[in-house]
Structures are given as structure tokens and as C-alpha cells.
Picture (cartoon, rainbow, N blue to C red):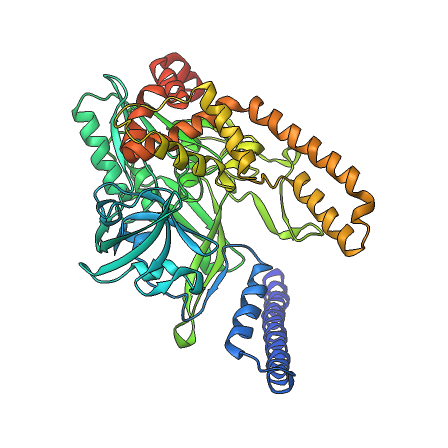
Length: 545
């Protein structure tokens, strides 16, 4: 009797379940079709009836991008002009000028020329402001001006730029640029190897492997892997880098989604280089995505001691989808999870505050997980180091100085006042720091703290309501008090700020290589990592070996 009833009642239950799924799909499809029809008729009505002439392409571009902005910052639409196949992100190779540049109002700023590449050979320096490329004035070119600096190998481009207020010209000759994932490796001492991994391109694992093997051949018996400031990159490279230190068939990361096909488990597939060599990994708040997969996985597998500050917390996975007319969508499809089950993602974009800002999980709501050997680790976004270092945590005033280019611009001024340092390490004196504070004041560099922005908004509102003259005395008092507090913070965080100024200056005189050479002997986080590796009792205690 029992099998009869089981068959009789369960089959209808399954059938009803399928009907429910089918009905749900139809309802979703109907809702999507309904909204598309509403939007289509609205879009047509606006463009045919609006009082002034409209640009349909521009309106649609803004509509799509505004819609996606309500989801997360990684889900992005690329129109026909946006879709440019930059190989630099995936392969580390491209044809260009070999420099890091950024746009600032109507100019392109050279942030960092790479040694012996076209920009460097043409004499461009950090801080140079490109105002014209060929016949195109940057102020008149509203699209991505960096595209004007790309082309076939040996293409010659005339450049006009400002340096310290003086207009100069030069000729760039485009060439192949190979941006290494491992820009530097070397020995800190007789037994400690040091590897810098700056991003995860398609050569990342191969470059780390090459550095590791050469350091071991040169006598290194322990390794410091520096992931500070590494924004991430390709997932498979992160897995292969972990594979250098752990055996084949280890789970490194899983992805989870509401869509079944996006749920995946990624394991190591190759023979490792060394599963025993002591390993310390440095991370900070700018270590993201693939950096967090490597540090999180090796922490969960008790394979490395992690030092620094909590990493960024970018644990959302994107996939590119080709659309019609050469457009493209990069859409978030899933989340990353480390071997212990921790979610890397810090911000919850599905739940935002009244201002539309995604919130971080409160520390009291963090969940505990266990590493392979039973150590307790927590989620909450990013990777929390085994040893937290204050040096890797940045004060708000310092963050503001990086954001508003206060440090960068002062370093430019310093460089041209002291052009002959050569390979000497620039040392910032007390007088130099006083000059730095005066530079900020003279150039009216705004810190744009939340308090400062709120105060400016108050004055703007007061002007609108025509009561600004009434509150002017009180406003000036608050502004003076705020400026005084900022001066106090500049003094309070002087050590941190001076260190960043010095590092920026070293790059001006000796490029990135000079900075890493400086790190080997002077960086406090590296020194702490070496200290932990040298104390095998402490190292093994942390990892419960």
C-alpha cells in the first residue's frame, strides 16, 4: 500500500511544482515585457514631443547607465564608443605610451611614466599636464582622451604639455608596452625572498612562479608576497598562484548565485612548486578581488600568515555580455567565497540606506568560520589579517590628501626645486613638512571631509535662501575652526603623511624599482613579515602547525 500512495501523491506534487516554476517564469517574462513596452512608448513620446531637439542615443545612454547605477558599481553598460579592446587588463601587453595617466578637468595628468617606455623616452615626467594631442585640444575633447594616445607601433604623436606653468612640446613614438604583474622581486636578506604582485594579468602566475623559483635557487628559504594595493584581475591566475604553494585538487574559491549555472567550484589543477616554504602575505585596504582570493584561500588552508589591514572586500563576479550594435554589458553574476565558506564581499548593494549608499556589515554581525586546522576566521567582507598592522591603516586626512592630489602635487613642486638628487634617497626634513603644509594652504587644496562638505552645502543653501549674510560671521568661525582641526590632524598624522610623500618622491627620481629597493630595507610592514618568518615558533603557533 505504501509504495502505491507514495507514487500517487508525490507525482502530482512534482507536477504542481513544475507548474509553479513555469507560472513563475511566465509572470517574470510578462513583467519584463510589460516594462519594456512602457519604456518604449515613453521614449518614443519624449523624442517626438519634447519642445527642443533631443539626442535619442544620448538619452538612452544616460537611461541605461542610471538604471545600472542603482545596482552595484561593477555592473556597467558600454556603448559603441565605450567598447575598446584594451589588452592591457588581460594580457599586460598593449601598444601605447607606457605611463599611468588620469584626467583632471581639461587636462591629462601624467601620474607615473614607466622607465624606458615611450613617455619616459619623450621626456615626460610625473605631474606634466598634457593639454594637446596632435591637433586635438584636450579641453575640447569630452570623450576618453587616453584613446588619442593609442595606435599602431611606431606611430608618432605630437604632444603639448604644461610643466611648472611653462608650455612644452615633445614627440611620442608608440611602442609595445609590457606591464609586468610582478614588477619587482629580490632578497630582503640571505634567506628571505620578496615578490611584489601588482595585478593579475594572464602572465601573473607564470611571473610569480619564475620569481619564486629564481629566489629559491638564490638561497631563499622563506617568502614575503606583497599584495598591497593590488586591485585584482583574472580568477584563474589567482588559483594558479595559490597552486604554487598548495597541492593539486585543493578548493580555492567557490562562486554562488541565484542562477544555477553560475555556481562553480574552482580547484588547483597542477603540481605545486613548494608546499612547505614559510610564506607571509601583505595586504591592505586597497588589496581587492583576486588578491583577496589568494590571501583568503591561503589563510583558510593555513598555508600563509597574513599581515596588514583588512582588504577591500570586492567579492562580486562579473561577466561580459555582447549586446547588439557593438555594445556590451558587464554584469555581476555571483559572489566569491573562500574555502572556509567566507564571503569576500563587504558592501551589500541589495540593501542601501536612505541616501542610496550600500552598507557594510556591522562587526557584531560577523559570522565565524574555521580554517582547515580549526583556527577561527570571520567574514564581514575582505580578508582580516592574522596580524593587523597599524601602518597599513590610513587616516581620513591622509586618504583626503591622496584623493585631492595634495601629496602628488607637492611632490611635483619638490622635484623641480631639487632636480639633482639622482639615486639619493630623498629625506623630508621638518622644514620640508612645514613647506608642505604651507603649500596646501597657499594652493587652497580642499580636504573635502564630510564636515567640510556639509559646511559648504550649508552656505550654498543659505545663499539660495538669501540668509548667507546673516550667518556669515558664524560660518567663518566654523570654517576657521575646521581649518585649525585639519592643521592639527596634519601634525598628528605627520609620520604617515611624510612616509607617503617620501615614497612619491622616490618614484620621481628612481621609478618604481627604486621604491621597491627602498622597501626592502626600510618598510615597517615588510620588516614585521620577516620577523614573523624568522621566528618559526610564532609562525607555527599562528598557523597551528
